[in-house]
Image (cartoon, rainbow, N blue to C red; front, side, top):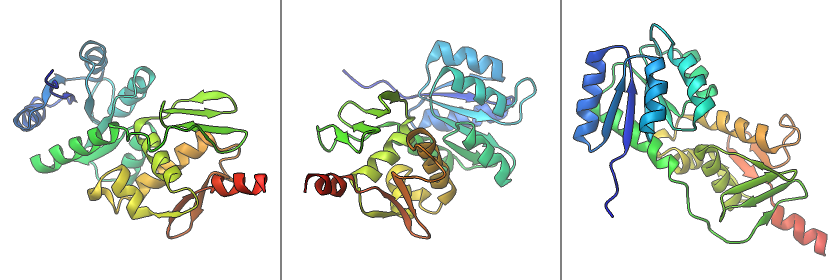
Length: 241
């Protein structure tokens, strides 16, 4: 059966901007839906079940941040924020609220399509490298085959980017993975200098996995170099010795 086209919901109160985005995404084979307000976006989210949402920040009824909060109550669909502002605060705020990326207006058709494809790639979770349950310690269990993470016997839900980041850290357990390598593997080669993404998602993982996120025992920082997942294999070997 042929794969259906990926569905993109564009949320912007400027019809000309929606038209520009629609033309370029449809040219690249995407199926595009549109909403002129945050409230309409929530309706389209339920009806159309898009694969990705492009969400403008500056809108009259619900702004992009409030709309994003409401989207996250309903769905983990990837969201790219569209903003006319270049301030770092807006970008960080959007990411902290659950956005997956942002594009600053004006942007080129090439940048638009590249960002959309990069975020969609991150939703395609890596296949398991092994079928064994990883027992990190008494608290943390990881089953990449089932895509399940257990902390204190509770199933923890990870967003696709969080899962993919954890996957690459665990597969290199005991080794320092440089910032650039993690960014390229998880976000894409074009994101290798965007270290704020990495810091933010490492913090997300620590909040979900660590007993004390301020004093992490699983995901360790190698300052100025990268991150290292604890070498649980060596710890188990020591216990058996």
